[in-house]
Amino acid sequence: MDRRSSDTARRAGLIAVAVALAAALAAAGARLAGRASGGTLPPPSRRRTRAIRGRFRRSADQPYTCDCGARYRVSGTDRHRVYWPVAAPEDAPVMGDSCVECDAPLPGGRASRPA
Image (tube, helix red, strand yellow):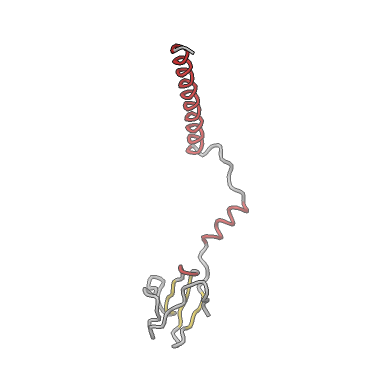
């Protein structure tokens, strides 16, 4: 194979790669334009919409009573559990991980459950 034919073959390969890349970019651009305009994607099914809403719905507060008798409202699960003294407003949760009356640790892991 002489030098001219190898240069021609290399040039043809580079052109083929450039054409394929241009086509891929055009397809991606068209898809993104369709999403931005609210076009081609089908709406989610009602069943899926309900499942998504249920995941983000606030769970009902659960009661917890410490061994010392202090009562709390509890929301969330596992390490995302938040405690409020029963009489405290919504914007005043317990800021630590221990009882405000006796300093006993409040349950916070998977193994423990509010009583």
